[in-house]
Length: 147
Image (cartoon, rainbow, N blue to C red):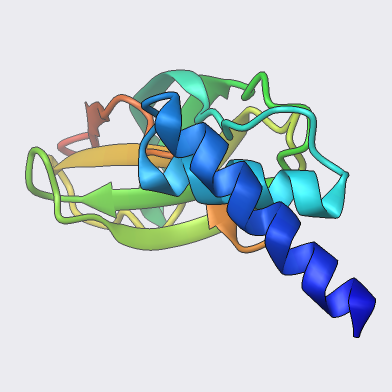
C-alpha cells in the first residue's frame, strides 16, 4: 500500500509544479509521466521539421505517388513518425502510415492516387501512447500524367 500512495503523490506533485510554470496541461501530463517512468529526460516530444512533399510517378502502370522527406525529431526517445494527409489545405488529416524509427526521414505515399492532385501532409513524432504536436504542413502535387 505504501508504494501505491507514493506513485500518485509523485505524479500529482509533478503536474502541479509543471502547471505552475505555465506549461499547458498536456505538457504537464507528459512531464509527470516521464518523471514517474524515469525513462524520458525531456518534457516535450518534438515533431519532425523541414517536411517536404514531391509528386512523382511510380511506374507507367501504377500511377502517381508522393515522396515525403523531413528532418528527424530532436527528441531522442521518439520511436516512430506518423504521416497524416489531406486534400484540403489545413486538414482535417487522415492517418496514412506510421514509419518506424526516430531517424527515418523519408516515406513514399503510394496511396496518393489522384493525378494532378494537391496533397497536404503533417507529421507527428510518437513515443508509446504519446504523440507530438503536428509538424508544419507541407504540400505537393502529383503529376498530371505518368508516362
